[in-house]
Image (tube, rainbow over all chains, first blue to last red; front, side, top):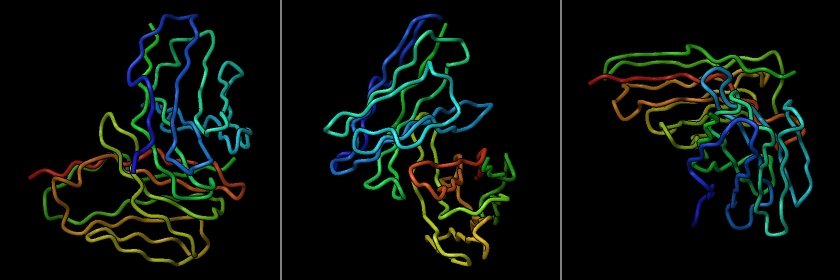
Length: 112
Length: 111
């Protein structure tokens, strides 16, 4: 059974640019959530989508946005990148969003 | 705001020793999960505890959920070098779809 696939694995961007990250969930999973992991703050919740609707949102600025497509694949966008956005971005999929989360390997974003 | 405090943050022990990691909150969670993360990879789910007072065992790992569903512990018996990694606890809030993570415990088991 295929796991959660995140692309790309590594990304280097310049301050001020924008970036789009992709997440393909496990087949049959309708919930996709995104997390930012940094050494200082740990894992922080960004948002969760269920059946194309944003159901939960964390405390991140509006520069962070996402969407989910009808096939449950999800994208996350960060506009006007800042140095502090450098982090490992993880997505997790779940059948219902209540439990049984499977994480992808993450996208390592470096902003220079 | 729901917070999870995990302790200790760092733990370096010798092979064969026992250890316990704690995860505490002032909030009630509908369930609590424990993950293990290797460098450069995403967290891997070890266990989910749902019922207050629940105890689950996974080989040498024992997980306990507090009676009030506000705290949890992970106990490892006879640690091995293969247990090295970042251990994370995460609470599921009542709305679902959102995991609140503790800061993690970096475990190093030396042969």
